[in-house]
Length: 182
Length: 167
Image (cartoon, rainbow over all chains, first blue to last red; front, top):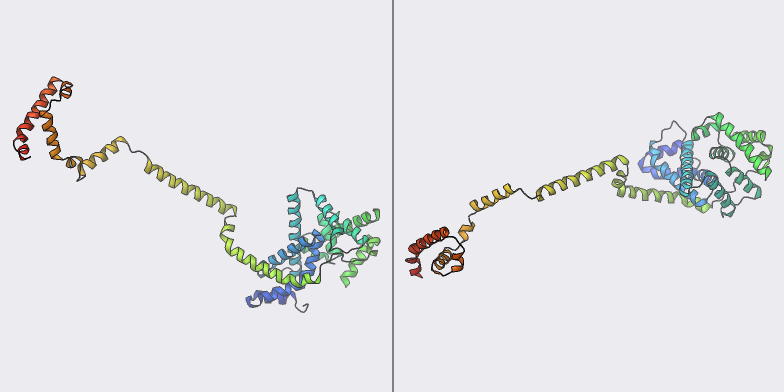
């Protein structure tokens, strides 16, 4: 599957005869990355499943118009991130609860979830991450777990590299503080 | 790999404690989930295509500018229909009515006068002239009495001889 570059997939997608095949390749290539990226934002598996599907549906609808002045990888990440953040925003507005309440709910659901298998220290780490402001949380996850370069993160989040580095630094410090205090 | 090392060093500089933690993915999703994901997405795309075809017109009017335009068209249509209905159902003026009435009388081939039975009219006048309907005669004044008598005599003289004899 990894034999196909993004360029190959794009060329195949633009041909109507091979569009479905190319799209299938693209899903297989990015499905795990996108799933875990969204999962770390919304925590719940079922919500993540819906959002992953919506993300790929949007990718299918707009891929033929994709301009190659950006990387396909960062473009896909951006769509997934926007989907997840829009979902959280809707969830907060619908239930009239604050940012902290939603994050608190997600934190509580972590251990109860059958799709979570972290040990005690990993659970502490995840709960600490959930206390961070939304932007810092995104930056921490994308750097720590996804090992994304600052330049790519800058393209996804439309933030300068300097600001991202500062956000990551603050996030790491806060997480250490929360874990060691509790 | 270079990027992973860079990130590890970056974290170690900020927080040696966090750098010392084992990095693992605690979130689970089964292999079966990923095996079927692509086909589920394809199904969703096909379903949405059908939905878009069916509801494309409806979604068109969900856009505010088209919704306003459609509303204005509906209001305008109702106003026009109401205006014409109101105009046609409005009672016509007396003058217009009387014109129509006289037009009908004058132009209609089967007018009221045509429909009167001439024989019946003659009978009535003859009976009137010979009757002893004092009640009627007493209610009219003398001048009218004279006129009536003249009419009665005229009818008698004109019809008694020929019409009544025929009967």
